[in-house]
Amino acid sequence: MRNTINKNIILASSSVHRKKLLAKYISHFQCINPDVNEAEFNKETGKELCIRLARDKAQIVANDNPNSIVIGSDQVATFNQKNLGKPYTYETAFKTIMRFSGKNVFFNTGVVIISPNKGIDLSYIDQTIIAFKTFKNTDLIPYLDSQDDFRTTAGVKTESELFQQLISEITCVDKEAIIGLPIQWTLSQLDNILLI
Image (cartoon, rainbow, N blue to C red; front, side):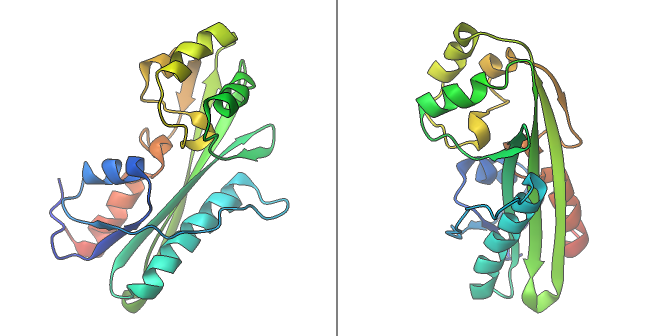
């Protein structure tokens, strides 16, 4: 655990999952909801969209907190060259995930760290590839029935044992980035910035 008391770190996010992940590694930070319009631009790739939204989130919060170190992050799933967001409902999650049977889904997670008055502007994109087994709706239902929140990218929660039964392989650099924040890159940058 890194001691970050009096370091003025802000996570520009309302995500409980990102907050919980960052709290595993640093002791003190603030969360501010950036309230960003997450609509994608025409022909925007998953990588372009996730890093733009991460930057928008960080910039909105940094505008009001120019002396703070602001972390913005966003995740976009791409399947069959189409970007996917959060399903929000059981029914939408069911339809979305059923299409993944026997296929690969690409999860791009962008992170931006900025501090206007300190001249800090860093960015990174992590990609996680999930290869799904061929599965039936009866295989998917136990996972969905175990969930009470469908506000995750494409309805995916890799930490769920029931979800893990649907996948054959996860290819990634940072195994926790799928949660919504490339934590290993973020921590290495904070170490450099703060000399923790």
